Image 1 (cartoon, rainbow, N blue to C red):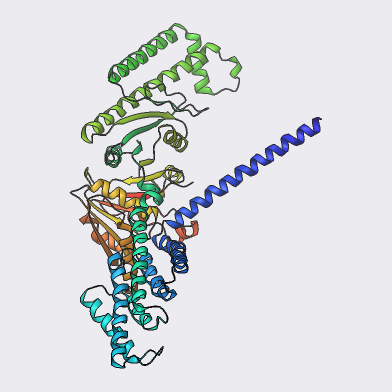
Image 2 (cartoon, helix red, strand yellow):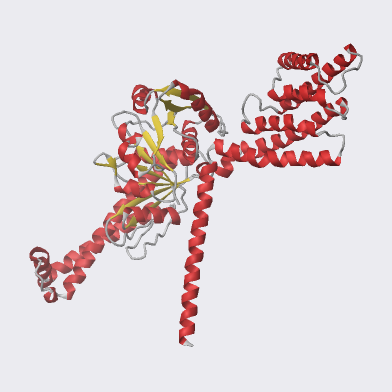
Length: 548
């Protein structure tokens, strides 16, 4: 029985592991598919492949149910439908143009057929005369040109009208109008409810990012705090959480504590009596420190033992008095308490600055432990969806802390402050390709610029033959922007470093990606752009989307 029970437990454990792996694989695949669909070209191709067959199948079903609908209407209908869905913001992506061009083409073909029959007294039968074809194309070209409804599918309907066979040409024209109106209605619904709203479904960075965590590190705390708080203030539910990580075990602060063992964060919002609580904590700290100093002066033996242990580092620790360890631990706790109290006091100054100058709610967290782990834990506990951290370098590369945060499943901006600017309204966004990163950078830029600012979305090319495709890519990226902000697109024929060096002075912020989706070998051969533009005197924001 015991062997059977062991086998059952082992089998259940293995099944649990397999199930967990399948779930992880499923999440990775779904995430990969979502990232793939974030590229507009891929999304349009999927829409064409899935929607056009369904629409044509539905029209075919109607033609089978209604004998008056001829199968001859399908070729121009399929071509016109592809033109609509493959380029929904292009020249021919107008439902009115789509219906009008098909209908006008069919009418022109009908007119040409009637005129030919009149001229030849109805002779000719099923033979299509050259005069009929030429007249149909001529009339279609003239009318669609004058009415500004030119479309390639109009010419195909004009010719097909001449060979309707047993179907009355008038019925064929009416069938074209009915089928094109049906396709146009489906296209309008798809474009308005899905394509133009795709940012809500596909681009994760523009769905939230209103609870901002700001680690207070380095010498650019004030600039970074203002930068992150302005991003949060752009949303009605925006909120800022300031994080400071102190050394030691328990921080004993009024805000939050991360223990080395459990790494638990206890978050406490600001209260109206925060100043009084801080003063009470500091007074208690100083009082405890005085008591310990008094006790140590009264106990010379303990003081001697502690001094001997610290200075000589003798291996015979069993000879140290237990009371000395107690006093030393109390001194350490006192100093850590004073450090935490000073940290809380400093954070409160930033809290008041953010709430006064930016007008966004602000909380604070004081933590201990590994900086990356403490930050990740705070993100989860404080329910933050964006981290704005100061830019840090180590031998010309990102510091271990920033790299660690970039590898977390949370959107992160590393902010490098080079100026004293506190209001960023002229912003340059460098876009390499379509996707979630590009839309996220533009979203952050429009938040900062506001109604009075200007955002320049730019991409660089190496050859003039790439210009048309680059312009289309930029148009697809900015067409999801819904806020009222002045946005321009620029295609520069130069390297990224040359363009930034020549134009950075015209902007007070440069936003670019972290190149986190590139391989290690690629980053080694060609370092990320933000590492190659260290000499510009403009603030730089490096955006990295969260990774699962």
